[in-house]
Length: 361
Image (cartoon, rainbow, N blue to C red; front, side):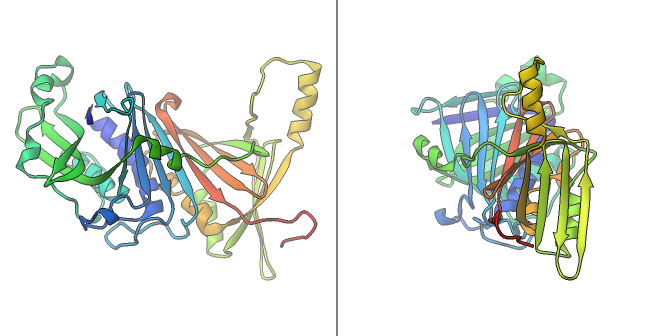
C-alpha cells in the first residue's frame, strides 16, 4: 500500500477550507495514541481519481482547545468528494492490492490543525488553536519526492511545496504532511494517526440513500441562511422550513410567545432530469412542478451546524449551494465548490415527523 501526493499552498488552503466545517461536526482532537481514539467519526477514501470524506456528527469526543464539535450535530451526516488529479493534488501516486483504493479512519480535528500549521509555515492563513498533533521525527525529513521535485521546473518558481503521504511513525500508520521551502531553509513535518481499513468497509460509510427531493432550491452566496438561523436558534429550538418550487423559501418560528417569518424569493428551482427543450408537455410539467411544496420541522441547532461553512470558508472557494427538502425524511444541504468540477460536500440533516392530519405548531 502506497500513497504520496504533491500540493501547493493553494491546494492546502482549499483542503483546509473544506475540512474546517466538517471537523466541527465530529469533534475529536484527542492526543491519545490509543487506536480507539483514532477516527472520531470520519473515514477517508482515496483512489486515482478522487478523495472522499465521510463523517458523522457527534461521533467524536468533545474536547477543549478548538476540538469541540458543533452543538446539536448529533445525527448529521456529511459527505465530501474532491477531484484528485488536477484538483486537490498537483500530482499523486496511489497503489494498493484493492484496485488502488485506500480507506482509513482519521481524526479531522488533528488533520485540520496540521493543515493550519502548514499554512502558517508558508506565511498564509488558517491558524487555529487546537489539540496537539503526533509530530513526526527525523525519519519524516527524507521524502522520496524531494529530489524529483527540486529538479522539476514546475516547482522552481514556487517557494513552498507540501508532500502528503501515508507512512509509519513510531510503528503507527499516519497521514504525514511534509512542508519544505524550495531553498531548503525550512522544513515542517506533521503526522496524523490513522487506522487503515479494508477497502470493502467503505460501503458502510457511503452517504445516506434518500428519496427524490420534493423541493430543490439553489442559493447564491450573497444570500446566506446562517445569520438568520443563528438568531432564530436563540428564540426557539425548532424551525419550520417551507419551500416551494416556484422559487420561494420561508423560515418560521411559531409558538405561544412569538411568531417570526423570514422570506427568500427569486431562488432557482432545480429539478431532477431537467430538459431544456420547450414543448406543451414540458410546459405543463413545469407548471405542475412549480406548485410542489414541502414543509420540514428541523432542530435549529442541527440546521445551524449544517451551515457553519458559511462563516469559515474563504470567499471564492464555494460557487453556490442547494437546499433539498424531502418530506418527513431529510433536509439536504449540497455545497458546490468553485469551480464546480473541483468537487462538493453535502450535509444530511434529520427532521421531525410532521403529520398531515394534525397541525404540529
